Length: 92
Image (tube, rainbow, N blue to C red):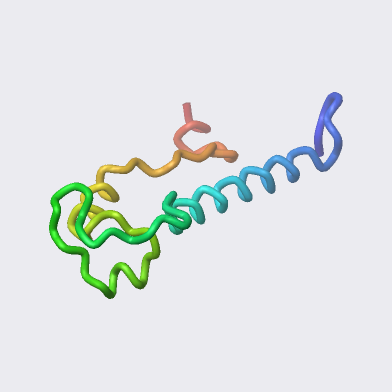
């Protein structure tokens, strides 16, 4: 139930929008920014050859498995908004 000037379905609408934005971010990360860029034969960071199977599986790939793994480990996950209070917050 919304209060004040908000519509009754405003909270559900905001949750739906947040969910759709998170899905769009995940899909963009999965496909990568390469788009129509051809796959590189050599890694952009270390100049090691990128295996043909990887180039075929991920169109537009620019990094070898090792370099991509390093980037994935250093990337922070997108922080969402906690819509429910945690037990700890309620006890304070």
